[in-house]
Image (tube, rainbow, N blue to C red):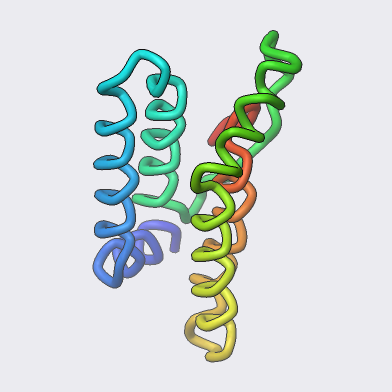
Amino acid sequence: MNFIGNIIWLVFGGLFAALGYLFGGIILCITVIGIPFGLQCFKLAGMVLFPFGRRVVNTSGSLGCLSLFANIIWIVFGGLWTALNHLFWGILLAITIVGIPFAKQHFKLIELSLMPFGKKVI
């Protein structure tokens, strides 16, 4: 069932969203300061490409307060807007019965797109 959901997701917008995150990651990786943020964009691109059957978990990494600081910078410079974008599409898709599984995937992506540092996709 996850395979079919991922194929439908990919055809109806998942590919374009993943390409957007991929393009943003490449642009951010041009500068040395942007590399950590670019890597998070690549993580988001992978999750957006095939969201069914994957989940986001917190990691107990050694970054500590650096992760919090990076998440704050992320939120200020675009994370809030990407999370609101996923919220909008999630609410819009939840209106129809057919769109509910896809809305759930958008709601799952909100957590990762709002604060990607300290999270891992399994």
